[in-house]
View (cartoon, one colour):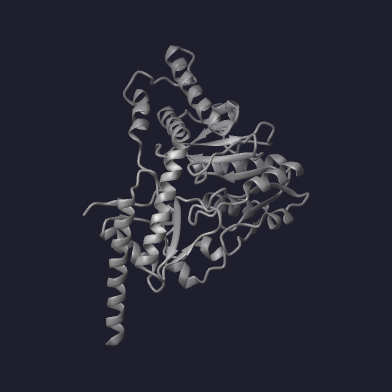
Length: 385
């Protein structure tokens, strides 16, 4: 049986063109340390600068505003732990549906006696910008709201918040890990203070990402070590990973129109096929959601059972964030938006990429229907005993 990969929000496969861009730094002649002053080091530094310029250009930033990291989690940590203490204020406003990369840092800040206010999303998965702004006071040093939710695809009112907070002089961070692949980002038009990105969400390598940090944003690195990344993120740079990340970003910019159109076709096909195959399936979505993520529930069938059977039938999906894949508890995101526990426990996530096809979507729904019929038939037989 041919495998069907529909867990692209967790990670995407490496694009062969990205692999090609990494080869000079893995098996080729560019192996120097970018901090070295000799020719080998200068060649490495030149490659690092080119990659930084590529990422900066993609979002309308300055090269000096890009800090390379080990991924989105480290970028989120640097933003929260680097900006908030530097402001001299001790209040963070965030949401209760953030990725754990933000939630766990928020918990840590609470342990350090910082005050954290977590705003709950509405029932459609979007936070109300007015409710977020109501929590901002003179004590607030940072607001952090993710751009696109990784479990539901719900797009948050980032532009509205960015403008309002910029006018108030309050730094604003957004976890944009899921957003960069689904929509253009222009930091000239949207005055966010910082953004986090990860390479493996856009056909790039794992273990590399970036933090965008707007010039003038208060920042004191919480890390100690060398002076790399202008003293903001110590440690010898992962040059091969960075080159691959930059190439993935470059390809994303070049192919954005095609990728978006393809993913929208896939989502439309999936929703149509699912409604016909399993009429009582409940799709959790909000107006303007990112098209690459569909979160839905099959009433009466737990997510764990459904995912196990999908895997046995060659369909890769997830119950939410890949970082909590081993957790059988219902999604904190769905519970935060007021969903009943039993429905949250039955919810799974399919996530598409431009490398998927409509035939794969049709086949996946067919296998899903067969699984549901089999499980419900078994349950009916047990009930009749």
